[in-house]
Length: 140
Figure 1 (cartoon, rainbow, N blue to C red):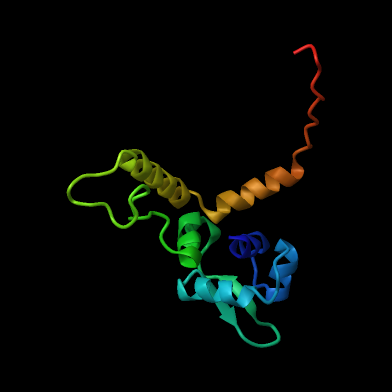
Figure 2 (figure 1 turned 180 degrees about the vertical axis):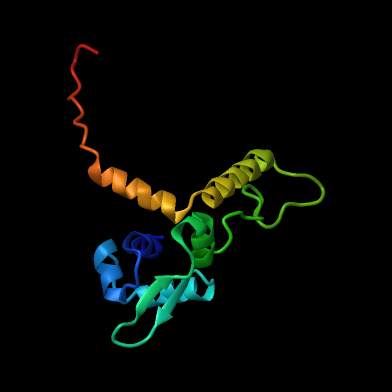
């Protein structure tokens, strides 16, 4: 996520070392992650002195779900939380509906969140003044 966010924020091609510096990532770890993103068609790479990595689509067209699933695999698990393994045909466990409904809601939220949204959120967060929290008093 951080690699794609760095590319979305930059709006241009970046070298791996620039992405690593921007997002405080180990530079040696990046080729593995970027390779997964390239394989998923989200990021492209250009070799050479002017090369680097760039987004294949606009940040508003790349969802958080796509990036997470490219790097980690499916967000929704088909495994039963209580029994392990796939849900059985002979009935579901007590948490089945709640668990699967929650996973579906998470997937929908991640699919609706784009890197343009995240880029806007980042800009807002860096401009917003920090709110100071008053210390707790014993009168409460």
